[in-house]
Image (tube, rainbow, N blue to C red; front, side):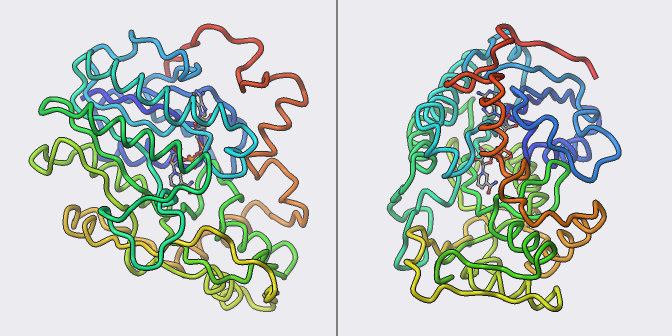
Length: 355
Ligand SMILES: NC(=O)c1ccc[n+]([C@@H]2O[C@H](COP(=O)([O-])OP(=O)(O)OC[C@H]3O[C@@H](n4cnc5c(N)ncnc54)[C@H](O)[C@@H]3O)[C@@H](O)[C@H]2O)c1
């Protein structure tokens, strides 16, 4: 078994590598990433890439076909991965999340790869009046969400009996990871609670937001890698759990409940966040009963609290720091390391490291 994980050096990737190494101890695991967040490590005793056989440093917009030789599975995580980054880098978001994904999928199919797993997002639903299932209309409200809709649309027609495609429409990620990020709603709330004892909601807190722990995202990817082709040559599936569907104000209240002395400040007159999606995860429950999410709201909050306390986290200004992915990209640009297309100034060819 040979698996290529593209975009393995972000928040989710290290957990995916860890999980796949457990499930497939003898598999050849190959990472490919441009390394924007390579140095953003938290709570690690060793580099997460140590569990790979090979790490390539390269831009997915110049993905070399040679890496696909004798590969069984490609997992596509690479992305400009949230709305603020997508708004700032619109063209790059379309190029990386959508166009490069389709290009790699076509090359993978031509090279005889059997399975392609794509990290999609529940944000494609945008705003819902009722529980959104996989047959509901999509309503992408951002460049990021549109890039996922377009990628899914073009992947669908590439699927065949010998090339199965699974699009996992993930709920919003949360939880501790070796490349922890604090630009995610629950992670942000726990960080606010620990650093300043106050969680200030920028909206009225009414939007619905389904969540999933990063380790459970890895579990779902593990399922997609091993899923039977009898489930269909193309699957786009909501990935999360019915019980981890909350309104933003409930998330803040749960954090305040678990971390004593924390005040939650609501902006009752603030305009609600436009994105609000309440999602139905029943199909995932039916198709992947052995890979259901293990973490709930309370266990995720405790894990974040313990993880942040173990690194003595106390940065009241963390929203201005490199815990936030957009700040990392802006910083790399301001140092003239990345150009306007988010390409490194000093790298033309992929570099390879054998681990
Ligand atoms: N975090 C979430 O809430 C969430 C929710 C749903 C779906 N997803 C999706 O899951 C995937 C992984 O998310 P994440 O949180 O780990 O994102 P991340 O931003 O932390 O990591 C993305 C990785 O892709 C790499 N990358 C970006 N552009 C690249 C390029 N041009 N060439 C090569 N590598 C490139 C980055 O260096 C980074 O390591 C993404 O596709 C994301 O859209 C994430």
